[in-house]
Image (cartoon, rainbow, N blue to C red; front, side):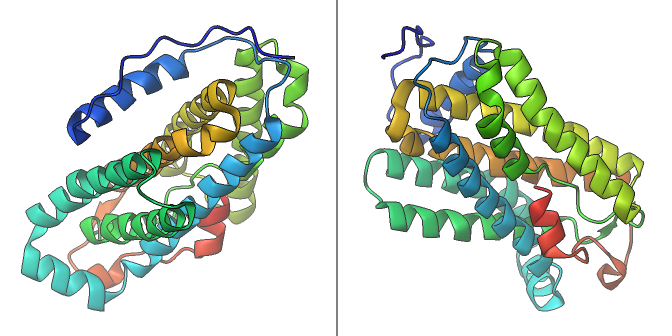
Length: 276
């Protein structure tokens, strides 16, 4: 049975990288507020595959956060390039590189293997430079921001989501809400409840909603081809957790003169990755 759901009207894809990024942002806004019911032939198994890919990227980012705390990395980079160049490289150049990777993959100029390896390396570098930029800010009451659990969101949408196919708001709310409950439970068990934790959780909930809505849209419209079209969604997801990290560290952290006293990169990478 084929879907009768009408697609969201989108603009024709421009050619320049800057225009593509802007158009993708407009598309994301359209998809985030899309409340159409899911079609009966919705490929739910592919949604879980996309979330597995998202988890791997977030784990790579988290390992980069860990690696960026080593002095042999952050000291020469900050001393040679300076804070301004490092900041621009992290929050301007790296996002553009990620967008370019996604565009090349969508244009079939990268194989699936090349795309996956490149994205993992890119996410790792995003984590490394996120720490280098914030190496003087300490989160004494809480380790790295507690990122959302994409696996929990994906599992919930996969297992019980079919009961809410006719109500997109309930589907998104239950899927993201389940991850929120698990995340809060982990914070309680590890004693990580703090203002920074709640700020991070709030930001991550926005990230999770955006990601789920975009993936659902891609699967509705493209089915098996959604892996290619979701490449930009994965890039946006990593960029959002970069901004999440920046906001939480700068607004809830404490400035320390000696980077060796900083605890940004001290949390167990596996714990942070699983709570992505």
